[in-house]
Structure formats: structure tokens, C-alpha cells
Length: 486
Image 1 (cartoon, rainbow, N blue to C red):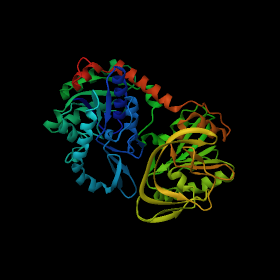
Image 2 (cartoon, helix red, strand yellow):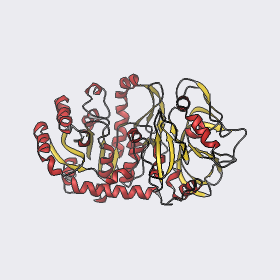
Image 3 (cartoon, rainbow, N blue to C red):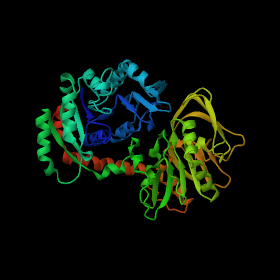
Image 4 (cartoon, rainbow, N blue to C red):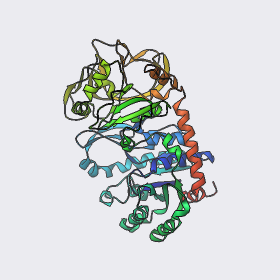
């Protein structure tokens, strides 16, 4: 079996994007390649063909590899909730809720299931590209590790370490990682990649040589800051730190940054619209009074995030926006928040309890243990769309608003207020469909480009792959992975 593991000197050094780019580049070379991440922590998730869920980054990597997303690509997924707990997903299904300390104690027992997925996946392809989590330099987490060196040593897979030069200190980050690892772990690392370089790579030649000298690892290249990356979905909430950028005369779509915001890649198709500025509203800031549309996003802790929304005064902003004739779209938990009541009697997402919603739609929601995971298609605002459902809870009237969408030709979804300004849906991903997005923007006086967002992402993956072909020693990486001459 051929495989290669990409680890990093820290979080957000570009591991996910590099794995996606490698999957597309090697697929373009005619190899059957699949992505794998033993353990992920993210509230951005995707529904798989086999009826489970995995991290959104692994779904993007599967797309890059021209493969259907499968639960074996991410056997352990942690979805952070309120009160320092996470929902744990194993092989695509909810297994329960764990505190951080409990997970650290129990994670070693999950290695068996991680290896089961690994062996099934590796039997289906020529090459597996594995993504680590965080950094192997976090040696305080080494005992029971299933995400980095614990996994690499269990399957004897070579590792390439990625350093982010844009954040500074990349020489120390790479050499420091080598210094803190024990000898057996360090021996798994066979090389390094410098990522996110701005300017002339020749200026880093001495630094590159210094890393090789200090670590004993060979370099596989310097990847510049690639424009294509900005056109890809972001897995991590780091993107939210960009906040409210300059408006430049564009229509404002405002989205409050809830503490447990989930699947915020729903907004990516709006970001790609030339006349739209997506304003992520940080805590402590009001929702812009001139926003044309407010989007209430998904959340992994609906009641806790509803309380946070009120504490920020955003409920007043939202209700005022509606009184002024502004449009509002709630997706998943955001749809639940638009209703009259949200109850969690079993403590699914936190302590048992209930809260009132914004009351802009007439439904009520009761959270329960059954999780809905399915791909869907439907019609909303007189436009067809495709998407997926991923939620825990049942929403019902009375009285019942008009449905926002009809799914699969017969099943009603969501709600639409009598004035047509308030829209709620359980459907994630619907804004990727150009017709639906254009219909929504038409309600705020905008003309959408009607392009399929999936095609834009696919083109960005091709551009990313071309960038890696130009700047990395892919033949060397293939030889390291056991595919010399491929």
C-alpha cells in the first residue's frame, strides 16, 4: 500500500488545502488517490454517500480526488458544543458527547476503528494522502494519539511536515518540532514543505538550507501564496476573524458570528458574487443597519447561541431590520432560532432546557437524539437546488407558515413568512445552486450571476494542483509514498 501523511508545525498552516491540491494533482496524473484524516475537530461537516458525516475538508479533498465522500475518509470527528464538550462522530454516526478530558483518556481506544477505516480505504486506491491534526509538536497530547505520530507509527507511513512562513518563525517551527519529538517519532518525518510564501523564493534559499541542516530532513519545495486557495471553502473558523471588510458600495449580507457557528461554508457562494459583501459580525459589534440581508447560520449549540445572540443585542438588530423591510434567511439552527420556541429536554446540545426564539416564524423545535443526515433536492423561490440536511430536532407548528421549499417533489421544508421577508430552511448548501442564489438576491434588489458554485470550486482545485506541480517535487513525494515512477 502506498501512502503519504501531511502533518504541520501548527494549526492553519495549510495542511487541508495541500492535501486537496495533492489529491487533484495526482488524480490528474492518472492515479486513483483518496484522502484520509484519522481525527478531525470541526463544526463544518458534510453528508456522505453512505449516509454518515465527515469533516467538510475531507469532503473537499474527496472532490479533489474525484471520489465520492465516504465515512472512512474521516473515521473520528469531534464537533465542539457548549460547556467544553464535543459531540463525537465515529464512522459517520453520533456516538455521544464527551468532555475534553474524557476524550483524551478514551481516544486511544478509537485507534481500532481508525485502522479499520484505513485498511478499507487503502484497499480501494493506488495512494492515500493522510492529513494530520494540529501539530506533532504538542507532545503533551502524544499519549493515546490517533491523529499524528500515533497513527503514522501504527501504519508505518512516511510524514512530510508543513511550515507556514507567512506567520513568521518558520525555521524555528520546523527545527523546534524536530527538537521536541522523541527519536522514533522524528524518524517518521522524511521531509518538509514551506507554505504560503510571498515574494521571491530565492530570498529564502539560505533559510531553506538552514532547515535541512538543522533537521536532517530534505525539502520538497516552497509553495507561494496561491490565489486559488481563496476560492476554496474554508474548514476552520479562522476565516471568520476577517470580520467586516470594506463595503466598497456592495450590498451587505450580514452574518452574526455565533460561538458555535457551524457549516458557515453555506455563505461561500455569496462571497463569490461580485456585487455582494459578506460581513461576518463579530461579538461587540452591531449588525449593520444598512444590511440588505441577514443570514442566521447553523450552530452546534442552538440554545446557548440563542442566548449569546440576545446578550449581544443582535435580536434587537434583527427585529429592527425586519421592521424596516429587510430580508432574513435562517439555515438549520438559524431556522430554529427564527421560531417561537426551542427546547432541549434531553440535554442533547448542553444542559436540558428551553428558550424563546425570535418569533418571526411560527414554528417550535424540540431537539432529540435522532440525527437527520441526507442529500436532498428541491424547489424554493421558484428555483431548483441541491443540498443536504444535517440536524438534530423536529420542527412543527401550529400555526404553520408556508414552506420555504418542497423537497424531492413532495416534502415541505422550512418556513416563509406571509410578507416573504423571513425565510427558514433545514437545507445546507442550497446557495451553491445558481438559480436559487439568483432568486434570493433578487429579493434584495440584486442580480445574481447564476453560476454553479461547485464548478467554481472545481476550477480552483485545478488551479491549486497546477501551482503544486510547479512548486513542489511531486515525483519525489510519490517516490517517498512508494509510488516511484507513477
